[in-house]
Length: 66
Image (cartoon, rainbow, N blue to C red; front, side, top):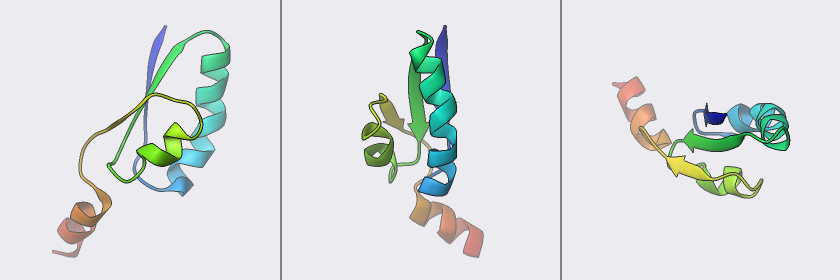
């Protein structure tokens, strides 16, 4: 099975999701991660293919502040 894991930026969103993604990978599934532009290095350290998608943290905060 192909699995897409999607999280917002920040270790508080990524780290709790890692055990599930890792279990899927160990079970033989193809796991790819999609997250904001600041987070690929964090995800990549855990060996997952990762793609930067959506708004970055600074853009999201600016829109929220408006």
